[in-house]
View 1 (spheres, one colour):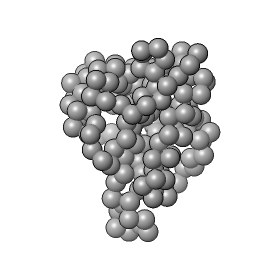
View 2 (tube, one colour):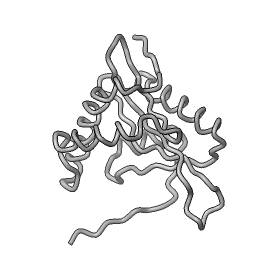
View 3 (tube, rainbow, N blue to C red):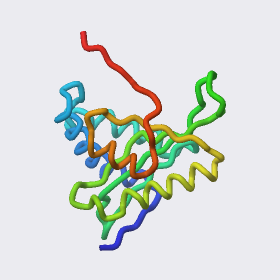
Amino acid sequence: MRFKIREASPNDIDAIVELNEQLADYHRKIDKYYKPGSETRKGFRKHLSEIIRKRNVKILVAETGNKVVGYFIGTIEKAKPYVVPENIGRISDAFVEERYRKSGIGRMMFDELIRWFKKNKIRYIELSVDSRNETGIKAWQKFGFKEFMKRMRLDL
C-alpha cells in the first residue's frame, strides 16, 4: 500500500474532523471526562479553520488513494518564561485509522513534522498523552519521547 504525506489544505478539514471524531471516541472509552466525537465536530472544525493557514502551525495528512487516513498537528509556541528555550514545539494531535497503524504512516508524518521543527530551529518538542492510553504512550516512546512532567486532575 502506498501512502502520501502532505501538508493539509482547507479541503482536508472534513476528513480530519472525521478522524478526530474517532480519536475523541477512543478517549471517551478511557474516561467520561472526554466528550463523544459527535459533540466535538463543530468546535474542532472551527479550530482547524482558524489555525490551518497560520505560520506557526503544521498540519499533515496521510492519504492512500484519495482517502485521508491519518493526521498530525504540530505548533510552535512561546515557551514559559522560566525555561531556557524561547520557543517549543508541541504535537497537539496525532491519529492514524486503526487499520493503517503499524504501516509506517505515523513515523512518516512524525519525521516530516520533525523536519519542520528543525527548520524553524526548535530543539524541544512536547506533547500530552492520557496516562491510561497505553497505545499512545508506547507509540510516543517509540518515537523517542520520555516522561518529564506529570499533569494532574482533581474531580470535584
